[in-house]
Image (tube, rainbow, N blue to C red):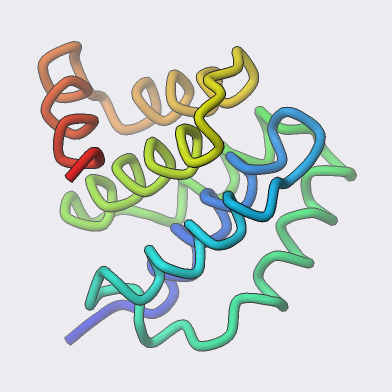
Length: 129
């Protein structure tokens, strides 16, 4: 059984990662869509437009760091945390440009989820597959 609420939080984190540099490229939006379909745990979220709208509103209201923290605190299952980190890594590299703002999201997730350097390396390798 999949947890739709945690899945929605992962989609929100992907959206926040894409918006971290102030804009979302089409390739990033496409990556979010593809990732939502690629992970069985995420498929039940349905259309992501409403999640994206709420994530953008939260970003504008509280800023990127607080928005990431708020979304991430709803992801408590270790499997969903790993999916979140992998997906955000994939979205951050989707446009082929690695920017500090998107890396800051990954760093924040690393701290919030208690990942060490080896965890990050393993998850980013998985994200490139």
